[in-house]
Image (cartoon, rainbow, N blue to C red; front, side):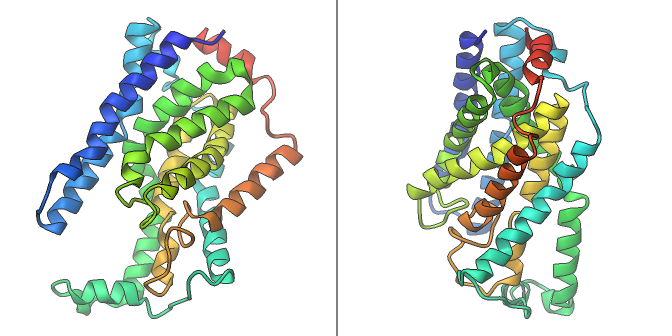
Length: 298
């Protein structure tokens, strides 16, 4: 049975928390660019916990269910955590290669972007650029996904831990589609300020929705196989860690809205192919998941 009241309150609380935080940088006015950037990052990191806080409030006070129904005490089969950690890396590489193949960007092994940034930093020229790129890449694929869980759990506790299971009475495909669309719309204030798709404040919102539906389907597949928000938070953390890595290897000035990052259309191709593979091998939809979930949220 669809829990309309819980879903409605969850969405209201989520947007009331997150959207003001997303929009707050617009009130900064003429301030130092560095200070504004740091403040924006802090506010948007806080906004990521909007869905998680909404999930907790709705679970405890609207649905009047125990906290453990959000399944933070569950991990599920461990093999799916390998998918969560390494799949974003593969998808990012595929997206980067397709960016080059389609001529959207050009390879730059001189790392001009990093050189220019380091040249303006105190003592920056003393560190070899190749070492900087190597260290950034290693951090992105090793410890960064774990650190990012501190923030991505805020989203995933809401989107996959709360919303997805309550949409499952509609069927898995509808639940994944609807939750993905809502997730994409939730990003709208940030996208309209130039995040992810710079130069395309309106088109970028629709592009973000497509990206969130595709990525959300993959994250949902992992959640449905584990019944755990931890695996969702891990893949989201890995995505945030590696999504922009290809940019380091490209000449500056290319159109980042259409290539070079995991959110760009060049990376959608890999996500579509992976989802098609899940369907072809009958891994998606996930069998018997409704019964498992009803035992948790019913």
